[in-house]
Length: 301
Ligand code: ADP
Image (cartoon, rainbow, N blue to C red; front, side, top):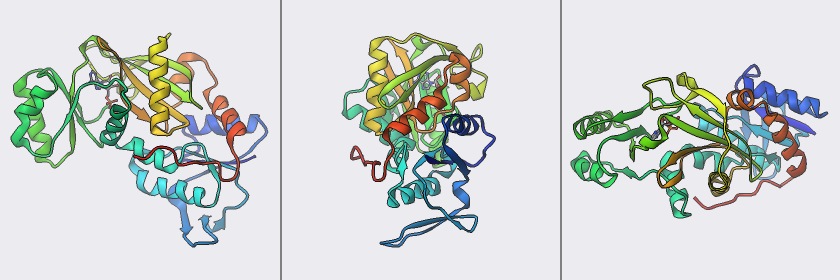
């Protein structure tokens, strides 16, 4: 097959592993920076040009769209879909998963366990909002944040009030969330490919840090997940309409709760922690499922 990886940099671990796995399995691969693409949005001959060349004969696309380029990146994925090229994660699902609030609302609607979460526009009702999620300690999260940036643990009612007012004063949209203390600074990242959890790791933040992001110095280890965690992760990926997803869970007193569903999960941490060939599994899934017009818009949100 002729596979395109949409990524800004061929040397990134996940990008290079996907390219390597595809080549090993006998495919032609090119890494294309979506920001260097320009598109012809015509009814009968939609096209994508890359560095002056018209892209043709592509069988499948693997989008690795960073959060900072979601708007243009998903437009490029959508254009491939217009051209009937199979995308392993469809553009609508990527956009959906990028909005933390929208994602949580969709997951809640389907009964997935979530930390109790509140959202408000005005700071007039902050007291009520704090009460609604069970009071302090609580977590305040910027909706647009990634890699743990803009995620704050407010330990007292007063701290919570100040942090919420400060974020809102800067016009940032925030979620206010029950703090899952019993997770003890750890979370579980499950990699779901084609409706199955193919790998899972436990991430733990450094001493004194409640955020377990690997980018923030967290450490990863292999973990055995429960059947309930497994089904929560696969259901969450399915609700978001993602064939490839990184589902982040917290182990709470009331069972597994989903924090986030990531459409471009990093492969480095999980492959190194588990020794599994996740990139190969993704390519294998594409081999089985790619075909013209096979990208289907699933879900409604
Ligand atoms: P980001 O998308 O920026 O990584 P997350 O929502 O995943 O933000 O939060 C970052 C980290 O903070 C998580 O990996 C987790 O360890 C911790 N965390 C987030 N929300 C909660 C919560 N409600 N209770 C306990 N820990 C949390």
